[in-house]
Every structure is written in C-alpha cells, then in structure tokens.
Image (tube, rainbow, N blue to C red):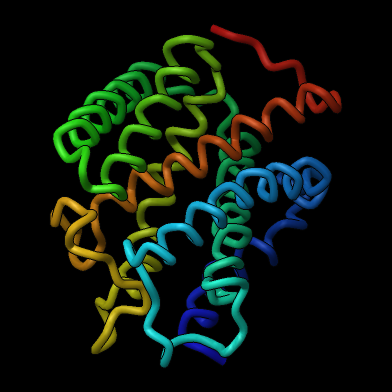
Length: 234
C-alpha cells in the first residue's frame, strides 16, 4: 500500500464510519453528494492532468502505486473524491449539531479576505500559472456566491473550511514532504509564489477552497431540486 493511499485512507475512515450517525445521517445525502463531487472532480482531474503534463507539479514514484490514469496516479484521482467527501461530512455535521450558529459577519470578512487576496496574488503573479489560476478562480467564485447571489449557505461553508484547515494541514503537509525525505507531490518553483505554510504552498489553500465551494454550490442546488429543503437568500 502506497504512502499516498495511506494518507487518503486516514482522511476518509472517520467520516465514512460516522456517516451513519443518527443525527447527521450523511448516507442519505449520497444521492446528491456523489454527482456534485464527480462533476467538479472531473474538472479538477483535467486541470491536474494538464498541470502534470506541463510539469507545474508532479509526483515522486516511490510513494505511489503503479496504477495511473493518464499522467495521474490513482491516488491523486481518489483525492478529488475522498477529501471532498470528508469535508462535506463536516458541512452536514455543522448543520445537524449547530443549526442556529451563523457567524454572518465573520463569514463576510473571510469572503472579502479571500476575494481581495486572491485577486492581489493572482494579478501580481499572473505569469505563475498555479498562483494565477487558483487565486483568481477562488476570488471569482467568492464574488459570485457571496456578493452577487448572496447564498446563505456560505456561512456554513466558511465554518466547514475553517474546521477542515486542521486536517488539511496534516494531509497536505505529508503530501508536500513534511514527514518524508522527498515530497509525494512536488511543485515547480516557476509557478508558485514561494510562500509556504510549513511545506505547503499557499496556493493549495485557494485551490482546495475553489474545489470545495464549487462542490457545495452544486450540492446545495441539488438539495433544492430534490426537496431536501428550500434554500433562502439573505
């Protein structure tokens, strides 16, 4: 079993085991969860494939299995299913156990910070493909969700993302070499700013933010479509 797969297994075991919690009953959301993950995951796999072909990032073979989809190890493809699953589990736990907790002011400040910093980094480092694409995309998505459509679910998304930062730092820390002699995932210095949280390029925060907000957006639209509840704008 590869180290990358062990990291993914540690990410999913808890959320999957607790998916049958009587108050959260996360398994009942699988009907809309997996289409949301697969739709967005396909976009990010294609993005990942292109960046891997372009050597903007890559993988150290000794930490991987021998199974590849194109240029991507199977573990990398699974990342776009298992990590969102774990994060959306947190999202539903917050709804089930803290239904009245809506830190609107904090979420707006957070959204403004993502937008401002994303546009700032993205335009200042426009020639750095990873920086520009991840940061500008996160800013544009936040503008749409929070400032144009003003979806109330952004408050829950904000809380989910903040909580998920802790396991994110652990998982991405291992992937980027905090505990190994070589990183499982490496990045070209020409396409990142060089600002890191421990071993993690700061762009990863914007990349994962973009992936998760897109998934939650589709997830919430499917909730409305299938009558899970009627989402209201502020």
